[in-house]
Length: 128
Image 1: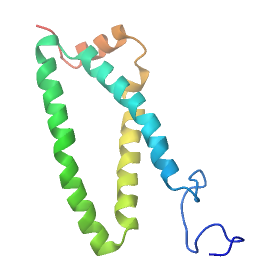
Image 2: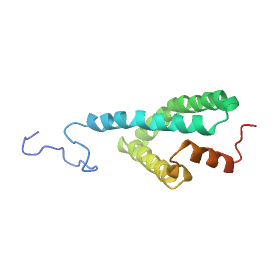
Image 3: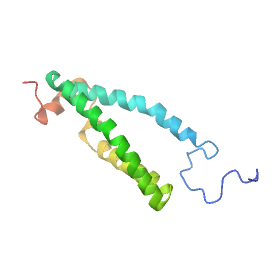
């Protein structure tokens, strides 16, 4: 490749992705993931009654780790049929949809444990 042309022909993607180092986007995910997981677990532990906490945690882990091989197999099938960009575009679209759902929900407005408890009370989740 010529040094005057730093990116391959036909490259498409957001400008914030470092085109010389594609692993940088994975590093960014790696930096954000612990922050998200910490906040998610804190929210779950706050709004879940103690007697259900083990069940909720076990179910969450079962679903999270259980769908990984299914997603990998499905992504491989999609890539085999439509090319390598298709599963990446689909995964990105699903991630954005999940973000939009969370950004427009009541969860975004939670600023304290008391607010989370009030939200749980409105949803009919009680300790009794």
